[in-house]
Image (cartoon, rainbow over all chains, first blue to last red; front, side, top):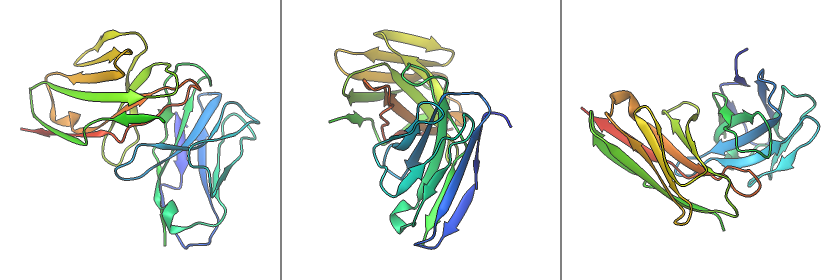
Length: 114
Length: 109
């Protein structure tokens, strides 16, 4: 693994189903983030984690949950998917939370909820 | 509230120079990032400004004026591969990035 990986690459999901998007980084970064990107809008922060064992809510957390059991993994779960959650989801990481450092992005997961 | 404003789309000619402007209002300020995003790909870091002035990095330069809430990205000697979206993202007082919708840059031969 080099950098950040996300799985799956794309997914079509029936409304009401549960789905977990996976994110793994091998850079030993403390901070990790989940964003969604929709046409015409900027990246919107869903949830973040400043360090393993802690998580926080971003701008659009409703309908999503996260966990951070270790440094490397930061899965995002949709408990009961709805069509408005159709989007491209990006996971990102940065070396240290609360400092002025860049974020590194995974390749994204394209999710369609029907 | 927090707000980022940048043009939706710009067109430029290969070999030319283009300037992409960004104005912002954030709760606190810890610098401003520019990212490049090719269609269907992830954003990648281009530049970071925290002090006023111009930062030059090869064909790309970024400028910041904190008092005016203004930044621009300058791309010189445009190449076809520069066709992408350019995202302006100031960092607020909580060290969270606030993302603009991006400027889609189209390069014509």
